[in-house]
Amino acid sequence: MKDLNKYLVLGVMTGTSMDGIDLSLIKTDGINYVKIIKEENYSYSLKKQIKLKRIVENKPNNISKIYEYFQLYENQITKDAIKYIEKFFKRNKIKKIDIISLSGQTMYHNPNKNITIQLGNGKTISEYFKVRVVTNFREKDIINGGEGAPIGSYYHKYLLNVINSRAVIINIGGVTNSSQIKNRTLISTDIGPGNGIIDDLVYFFYKKKYDTNGYYASNGKISKYIFNLFKKDPFFKKKYPKSLDRNHFDRYLNKMKKNKKNDAIRTALAFTIYSIKKFIDRKKNSYLNEIILTGGGRKNILLIKILRENLKNIKITKIDKYGYDGDLIESQMFGYIGIRSLKNLIISTPLTTNNNKPISGGKLFNPNLK
Image (cartoon, rainbow, N blue to C red; front, side, top):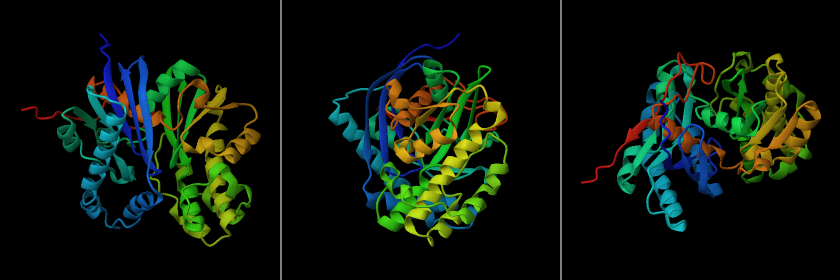
């Protein structure tokens, strides 16, 4: 029998773009009921965003030292999470919730080495707020042979069933991922770079966080040489489902830093568009009639314009059209899968993360109430 109990849960998301923290307070049963109560985004300063990226860039090459290195920064990430959660509670006069569901800040993701690292200490946060915290969603999937990502696709399934079951949700964050339903079966995968390379180049050339509306890219030309190298990347030869570390394509980023500013940014945008088009053009996707865009990339006017020119037979829509804030889908997502974890419901399968079997996941921390 399904557990239909509903819980008030705060979903906390810090994504691969490393540009802020999203919080969504929702009431859900983790199955077919979701009510969004209150949600907010807190943007990081450019200085803080660059600091986080530098931590990742300076990681040791020796895999055996990766965990030890990133643990040095766990306390600071945890303090930041507590600060913003507390601010959210005070601003919205929230006195009591059932559980906090924390994504953790992804710092390193390498499923080939069975490693995925998200920082944010669930136990510390649980003790501070005296509330249950569920986190560490990817570890069990990795242990069971999975990619560990995309891990929140069951929320996408919920959204697709509400909006359009013949659509595909494409989330353009630091990395681009997708979720769709075919023959009543959920299928998810990372499909290529998202905003990550674009953002890095915009900072390198202009010391800004992102390319607003695709302005810089619209004034540049694609470097055919680098673009052709990118299309031969080993990632595209891997079978779906698959996952990406945000920095997987750094070899092309370093080459583009030597190009003209806007040409480099336009080339990076071409990477994202190529990845989406390559995925959609597969014969297995012929039943799809709509692309629903979420994440920061949906705000790039040039990206949407080019996608519509290249994919004329499929409707392209921002999820905001359906009454959802496209910036906060992933914090809603972690709230939703946090309750699925609490109820020991499935959050990943061989067709969403390429694991061995359908499994739940996450680790629950209970506060000491003495």
